[in-house]
Image (tube, rainbow, N blue to C red; front, side, top):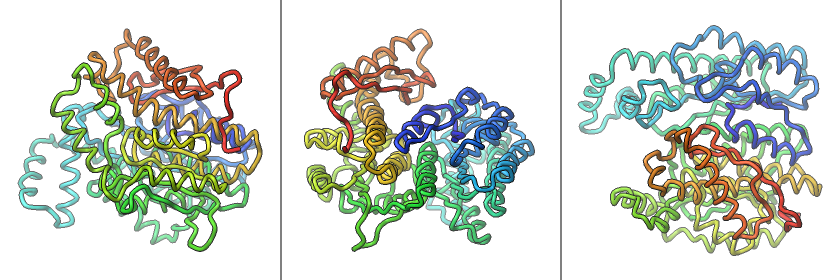
Length: 528
C-alpha cells in the first residue's frame, strides 16, 4: 500500500509500474487525493489505511499527505498543527493492529521557492518569492558569520523590502512542518515506523531549510536513529526508493551496486537543487533504497551509470530548443543563457561515446545497468540518448531516470536498478520492468527534452514557460499536439509503444500523465 505525496502521476501512478515488476498489486487511494493546493481527504485516508493494511505486504506513507493533505497544501498559510500531529496517530494504530507489517515513511523538509510564483506557494510568493529566497540564504549566512562583502547591506535591504507579516508567515509555516518532522522521529524511536526519510525538497547549501536539516540531523544523531532515518535531498522520487527498500526487505536481499560516470570529475559536481556533491547523493540514495555500494573486489548485482556533467548541470531541452528555433522565438539573452548553462555540462573529462562504450561492454557481459541522467535539470540529455539509441542500448537497460532534479532522476534510476535485481529472471516481471523503463524514456527524454521544448517554441505557449497555466480553451489542443508529437517520436524510432492517454494534470506543460500500450506485433522491449 502507498500513500503518495500528492496526486501527480509520478507520485500516484508510476509506482504501480514498479510494483508490477515485483508481481505486486499496489493499493493507492487516488480518489481521496487532493488537487494542487486543495488538500486530500485525510479522514478518509485514515479509514483507507485501516482497510488496506490487512492485505498488504508493507506500507509506504507520505507524512505530508497524512498530516497536511499533500506536499503543496503543507506549504500554505493557516494550517492546524495540532490536527496534523493528531493524524500521525494513525501510524501508531497501524503498528498496534499489524505489528509485523513493514512500514516506511517520508516527510519533506519544506523548500523555499526561488521564483516570484505562487502556483505552489502562498499568494505573497508572486510578489516576494525571489526576495524571500535570497533573504533565507543571507539570514543563514549571517547566523554563521559568513556574509560576504556587501551582503550585510543586502540583507538589511531585504529585511525592509519583505513585509514583516509575510516573513512571520514564512517562519510560521516552516515551524509547523518542522514540528511534524520532529514528531516523525518519535514514530521511529517508539517503533511505529521502521524506516524514515526526511527529504529536502529543492534545496541548496544555504537557507532556512538547510538550518532545519542540520537541526534534524543533530537530533537523529543524539537519539541514535541513524540506522533507520535518512536525511537527504529529494521529494517526488522518494516513494519509488522506499518501494525498492520494502521489496529488498520482503525478499531479504540488499542489492549491491557499482558505479560508472560519464565525466571523470562527475562525483564531485555540485548539482543545482541539492546540498552535496553528486557522489554523496548516489551513496545516500542507494542506502535509502536498501542497496549498498559494493566495495572492490566484490562483484555487484547491478551498475549505476551516472551521466554527470563536467562542472555544472545544464537546462533540460536546451539542445532541442537551440537546434529547432526556426521561428526565432528565443530572445538573444535567453539563447545566450542556455548556451552558457550548456557550457558547464561539457568538458574534456566527459565523453558520451566513451560512456556508451562502457555501458555496451557491461550489457554484453550480462550485467544489469541503470542510467541516472543528471547532466541537466528538467529533462534528459538529448545528445546522450541519441548515442545510447544508436548503440542499441535502450531496450537493454535495467533502469533509467532523467527528470527534474538530480535527486528525482537518481531516485528513479536507483529504484528501477534495485527492482531489476529483486525481480529475478521471471519473463512477465521483466516485461513489466521494461514498460516502466520505457515510460521514463518517453517522459524524461521524448517529452521533457524534446516535445515539451517544441511546445514552448510555439509563440502562444512560449510566454507560459514550464509552470504557467495553459488557458482552459487551449488545453485540449495542447494535449493533442503533445500526444501526436510523442507518438511521432516513437514511430520514427520504431519503438513498440503508442500513447493510449496523455493529459496535462496540472494544466501546465511541466508534467504529463501518460499511459503506454504496446503496438501489435511490437518488438521485444526488456532485458530478457
